Length: 165
Image (cartoon, rainbow, N blue to C red; front, side, top):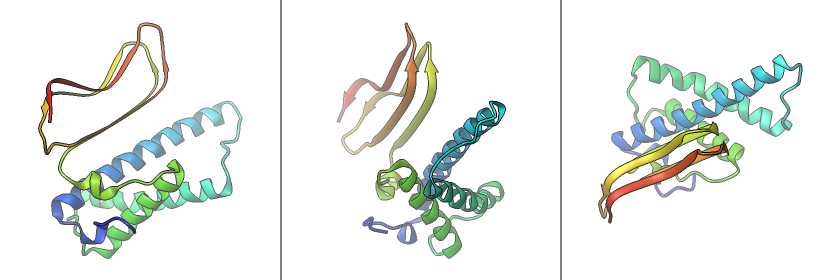
């Protein structure tokens, strides 16, 4: 791992933030993929993808199955837990491969707000984050992905009411 702060060296709060981010992001990806797969099966189509993509998805599923045990049973998230770190590194690596871009897990794990919103069709209003203000040391990472904004619809990533910085 090339990040200045690796998963194996994170402190407790950073590890918890990294776990939540990766777990939520991978869960969202797998849920969306399952929905597409179910729709494809209903329409008697095969869900495509290259062999590399299918391998990434399977690796991601296996790692997520192991991480679900930590999530469901509230097991401690410690950087000295080699199995935990290994599964998180697998999720991180496969998400990066699937998305085709790096994820700065150290930046994600630092204190701040991370919001990710995915929607297919927007008819009303979708706002990723509304804040009164964000101070000098505050951090917000907002990602909004929308396929279609219909007439009268509005998508806003972040709205800051008073002050930034």
